[in-house]
Length: 310
Image 1 (cartoon, one colour):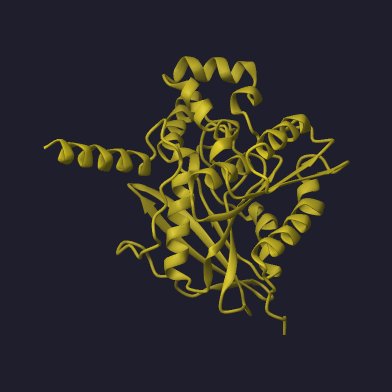
Image 2 (cartoon, rainbow, N blue to C red):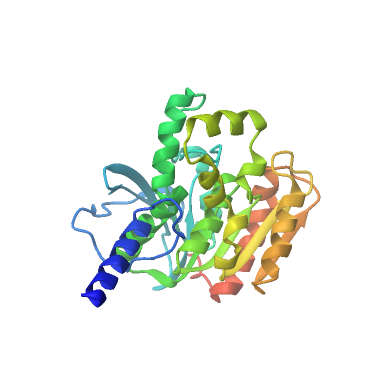
């Protein structure tokens, strides 16, 4: 009986972590098997010469999660992939995909990578009332701050796109999505490497005093929310290669916070690359210098040479 009880407890623990229960480490990947509820990819759209886009809407529980899968029109039989979420959230709730995210997607595809872009549960409209923001925060937390959505998108892509090399998947993101990229890398064992442009490494320290005060009054487990969603508290789980990028004139995320995070991470992970540039601020630095540098790093990490363009 005691052995049976132990087995049951283990199973319940695993299930709790998979569904994103508060306090669980963001781990426990699945195998990429085809769900009977998943849609077919359908026909792609050529969004620019040489780039194909497939769109699908998946469901985790009752929540729809849109996924965009980009493929180079001409590619090798086995290609690495970038797993990326939309940036721009206040780190309290999710985000939807939009056309404005494409400048962060297309450079990778042009260099021969597949891109798996996914939405984050718990999105709310900009300037929504606090009641909606709190509802979004609950969804966001239940999805492991987006880790469950990343895992869902990766499962789907690996099952439906056999060209993607499951051993060469790299998480990526900018700003709030960079924070999520680090959480995904900490919690998903299939991630080979992690790219984070200007990440918020300690969510509680980043938010304004007013936001912290209001959220803490309205959200019963605000302290654990901030703790669990902060990469600074998952350093010991970040074992993959990590590429960090930051502009020293960033007016949104203080450069010192990322430099400090990099130094702390290097104590337990020897495969950390930190690239800083003098100018470009929060966004343009990533577009102009960050992504090209990260692509060079990713090609070295995956030992990948893209198929020659026609």
